[in-house]
Length: 208
Length: 161
Image (cartoon, rainbow over all chains, first blue to last red; front, side, top):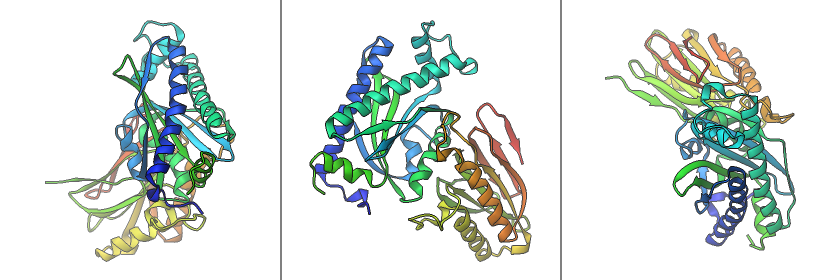
């Protein structure tokens, strides 16, 4: 059975941070290419959280957000979530579809806009997983992305429920993407499934 | 002065009027209010999963529909509530991701709703009102004073059930 997350050593945490770093670095590059703008990222944070504290991480339980979710199957199954505020999502759609910034609003999000966002989710998660694959020699196969638009906690809870069945804690690798140095675009989360953590750490040569 | 008591995910709280109970951002989760109208006493549980029996880790009883209802009844009775007077209102159980393919997380909301209804029936608690399903999140506030459950959504209106 999986070890308790709160017993992770500094070395293990560092290894996970490095994974987050490499994955997000790739994802940020992909995002920058799609947007034609410079994208910065924060140093990944590795946190072990109580399930109920996760919504706070993204600004509060009833904050309206867009969430793009994928699961990655393989020898170390994981969940990937890209969360951004609705306003930022609209701006990204404008940038991706060649409209004037501010042209798309919450009320006229159409099929094209939504599919542009899903494609964006697809590309950044694929580049994240690719980097992870190369680094760990593990196979990560992403699912089709799912998109949800609503209160942050509502978006998260179906995903958290999967973890809830086996644990009260969750391991979160979080990176913030920023455009032009300060304007936050969104948060990127990697949530390894219970049991995957050992596989990932072992692949990195970190003995538990 | 009345307070609004926050109930987190996989959490359960009890309050007496004029204090209200609130839980934010229910997606596939369900908020279960059980109350004694005469004493103006109620509990709100925010459950995530249908059954503690299928779970590998069931330490937190407020996480599951079956065990959360039992804990709620114990709490209420400890505070003088009478089982025969208890009523329930529920909200949540949505399916948040529209494009999730055949993934299991699609159906968790629906399974939660069914489990809550079954467990209320099993414990002989009358379900007075429910607002479940759909594909949108809900923030709910329960007022033990009159049993009103206020359901707020983004883009799907606001109602009292």
